[in-house]
Amino acid sequence: MEGGLRRPIRHTIDWQNSDYYNEELFEKELRRVADACHGCRRCVSLCNSFPTLFDLIDESETFEVDGVNYNQFEKVVDHCYLCDLCFLTKCPYVPPHDWEIDFPHLMLRAKVIRFKKNKTSMRDKVLTSTDLVGKLVSNKILSPIINYLNSHKLFRYFLSFIMSIHIKAKLPKYTNLTAKSEAKNLEYNSSSVNKVAIFTTCYHNYNEPKIINDLSSVLKHNNITVRIIKNEVCCGMPKLELGDLISVQNAMKINATILNRYVIDGYKIIAPVPSCVLMYKQELPLLFPDNIILKKISENIYDPFEYLFMLHKQGELKTDFKNYLGSILYQVACHQRVQNIGLLTKKILELVPKTDVKTIERCSGHDGTYGVKKETHEIAVKIAKPIVSELQKQSYPIFTSDCSLAGNHISNLSDSKVDATHPITLIKNAYGIKNSEYK
Ligand code: SF4
Ligand code: SF4
Image 1 (cartoon, protein in one colour):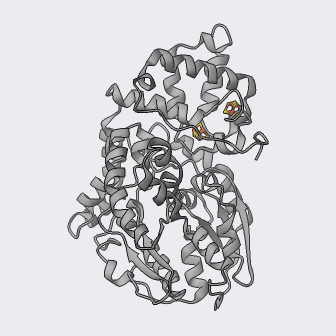
Image 2 (tube, protein in one colour):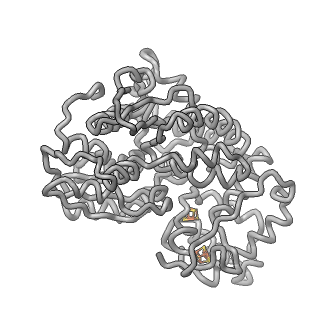
Image 3 (cartoon, rainbow, N blue to C red):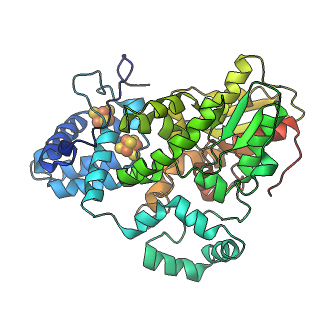
């Protein structure tokens, strides 16, 4: 952490106040922050937002922020995918510092204003409707057709032309055997006091349900009651990144009622995508600070390895590993890093004998949508380069990331032929658990 010495404070997001949408006030704040960043430049290597900002300033007539036209800042906003790294790992000027710099939430405000002005593209609205697309496609008829088309060059030219999806971006596969449709096989009753309700996440429910199966298997192995949450909707992170706060609010209302029932019944909630956990731990409570139910949910939602580590500390995690894992390259996903929980995935993986985990704390650049858009895919490839180089240089037999999208993005770019394996699958393999409803 390069930031200030005092623990950062995050102010609530005042999006229900009309001043939040006042562009004069926003521009004033934007220029104030841009000026601080111009003098500091610590974040230049984090993403493409900062180099874009600095280029705008350096190429302006005055070489200062006042030489940049307000509309030109749009480009800076386009390159921010709210990874939060600048706020939580770099900036010494975040609150409680007097300058009160919160660059990600400034970018969020810009996105919200843009969305309100109806300037958001149809492509971006579709890409962030993960639940809607998943529900439409994840059936016996459409999923094989879409999977075939998405890997077909001609169709990808067509998709690039009509939707501006980059032709080289690997798109996730859909399945009709979603985690929720297989819930009966994944749930488990135990007499133990430990109970977990799995928030399957859009990605793992519709695209990679095997990870939910593996998570469930690891929990069952530790004699934990498992439930699959079935009627919830997307956590809202994709819509947050779009600036569509009304959709975020609608999803929050549906989910709060459902998740709260599990919390009341003594369940801990686990989501195997760091962004979804971060949404409940940080973003939703900042957007709806008076919502007591949300606060209770945020105190009871866990990253899978945060939960396993908690069990370990209580002496309740089984360590009867039958297989060793060997040498692993582990990419720490940004949205897990900014949860400030520490390297708990590494700690749990290293409980397995003869296992050595090398961490790499670099952004993958994927962000769910940034890595597939025509105009940003190449930049996402560039951002992932240091991780890809490390993977290729050292020939690690195993590569892992808590974020499957990030992991797949990196392994797709690598010549090493090492597929990304989710760390929960590695733990399942180490236990020697054979059952797998999913291929
Ligand atoms: S939140 Fe992430 S993507 Fe946005 S400006 Fe900060 S480091 Fe860049
Ligand atoms: S966000 Fe903070 S650390 Fe980053 S460039 Fe701006 S002032 Fe510097």
